[in-house]
Length: 263
Length: 221
Image 1: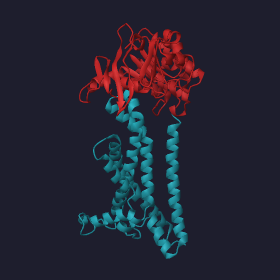
Image 2: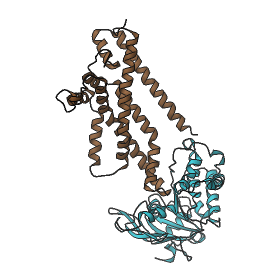
Image 3: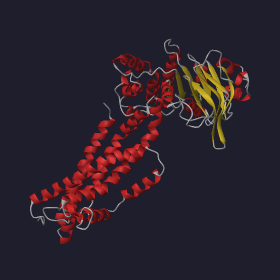
Image 4: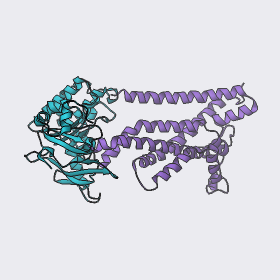
């Protein structure tokens, strides 16, 4: 693995994936080397549809098991071993409670915006009066203050996506996995979410590691510290965003950042 | 006009219909909602076969349900000693047999559909398996309610089962559908139509009530 196709950085990471591969029958949809997520950093992963971006997030979130390789997080390992081996139910719960996952099409539960945002805290038994201020602050950060009591059934796509982001934020997870969180949104909603992400990594008593899957290379350039390009399940380029855009090593990356249709 | 000789007799028929079908559906829901929820949430070998049998039973003809209950409660049947034949209790049992698979099947489908949609979201929100199941079931509540109402519709509208095991005895087991049958045979189409109209009005009222409940839920708090 060359230096430019490894998404590891020097400091000790919060979550690492090593030799991660996922196949469905004969077809391998993901085969990446090493990926490390660091607190306080936004790592953007670009790539066309079907390049394995969502599969990677699902593996990191333990929603799918790797076919080979492993993920390490919170002293536990999520590996290709048979289901009898691997994290205990308690470790699995603590793994999932250490991260938050925002999908492209958020699934909201029946109830108000506030009900949804507070849900993660409720499930952790942390929703008491002490959490009120935190919930209100997150709602305000994502421009949802006025909608707090609105039913989630009557939200626009942009509002619903902001609720999903707020629901993830209020937990203050160590790792935030975001799957195209701003796809199909208008610039105003994109701006709100991007500003919230940038602000989050700067919060000293939180400082999450963010893995942002995006189609949008401008978004990667705007807010990511490191960027990788995933093509057909493989990382063809990875490194500091500045370098990936300024001096791309792989011809496909060069074509992609220059705006050509490469996929 | 009325072949059913008085308005008070008509009132009795309507009340008996509602009492028989209402009781049957309440008892059916008590069994079917937990059963359907468990089926919707669980994965086990043979589940597909169980569901296929259930879907078949959802289409059970009322006369077949009536026949089975008739055999069970007739003098020589296993429950013959209870002397239930041609009583409202027999009609309740027959409608229970008819309606329980319907509510179970509808609840199972509703819960399974929500399970697919909400399970992963709940899991990555940090829900324990038990919390996940509770969230899924909570999302299915409106559909569970609709399933019960569908069961009530089926029960109030059916005629074959209550005819067989109730016998359409005047003042005892005559309900709206069996009365319609009788009045039509007698050529009293006016009376039959009035009874039919009452049935429709009852159905409309129940559905309006359910619709209002569901719309109220969706518009939020």
